[in-house]
Length: 368
Image 1 (cartoon, rainbow, N blue to C red):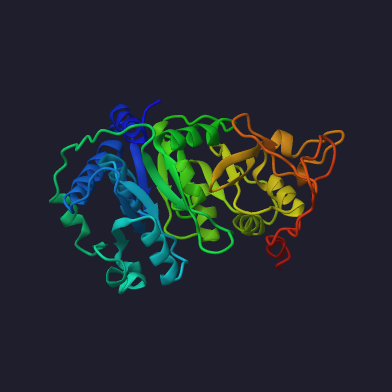
Image 2: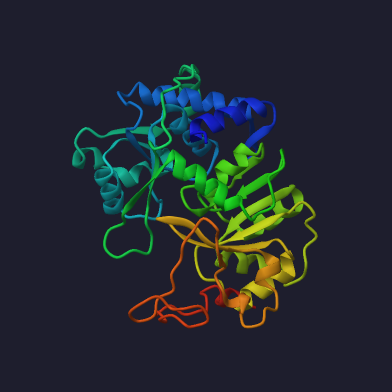
């Protein structure tokens, strides 16, 4: 197994002249994106960083987000995504407890980190301003080629829906490459030139698709924000093969389509996760998108855990009700369903928690 950096570098060489990244009307080939990543990697290392140091990032989707994904991997530094909806106190906690030495932040979000360098001794801020393109072009594009072991940390992501403060979960290169394999184990394979549309930030669930698309010679299309009408136009006008969506996004698309089937011959996968999806939304989405719907359940600590494709999800299965399930346990995962005091045996119900099977996305389908 290769480390993430080496696998990305090899794919960039194999697909040098193919389009790797697209955002806001601009396209970068693999060669161009890798070159920009090397320049950012060298700029980071010039800030007295060394491989293994932690670097946080606060940004929206865009070419710059791809630069940081590639550049942090090329430099061997550990990527720590911050979440744009967090309060300043949450940013401070994530930066502090992971031991970040640098925060890379877009100009748009810089005000959210005001005063952070006073609270975290030794912390440096790299703000991507209007001069970012000219600044990046001035950096060296020499490959720093740090030594990276499979069990070195690659990324630290923070848990969601947890009690107390968010916990940082470190993924090694080995673990991230394994997760990359697991995510696509039951999905249609990536063909060179396939496009994956990221309508959610790649700091979140959609980001798990960035690396497998890159390694397969596909193009990551990065939208700055989710806009259902714009997304529907993209699906009709661009050859999109994959996109990740939470149930509320799916419900908005179903509403715009008025529940009617769409003719999208290049679409292979709508990857749904991030929250429970109601039976009503799932069935309506199946009418619109056909057999392209896949459902995955996991947690930041372990992802993916269960998975289900359309032929299983929307099937009639004696003794089971797939439409209300969160998938089948994947071959690479272990899962226990617990009763009050021990593991529930097959065919028996586990302890019911306080969460309802009715998803919050139902309200979107009820709009006029």
